[in-house]
Length: 78
Image (cartoon, rainbow, N blue to C red; front, side, top):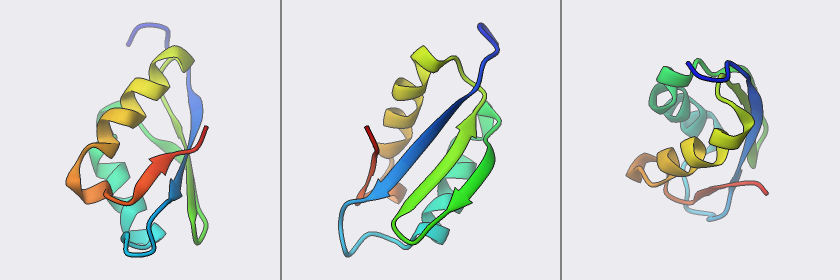
């Protein structure tokens, strides 16, 4: 992997009808498996995880997984 860094990314629940954080965390782990997610912390409306990607690539990676229908109602915290 180029750069070899890691960055914390936070996902927040935007829609009351969105799946709960625990369910979405499992889905994110599966969708992000190529980026070695670790450091997972799940709260009721927020999911934080560290991804093994350079900081400059975190927004792209996180944005890509949020387009998956399994993550509807969730967005990346800015």
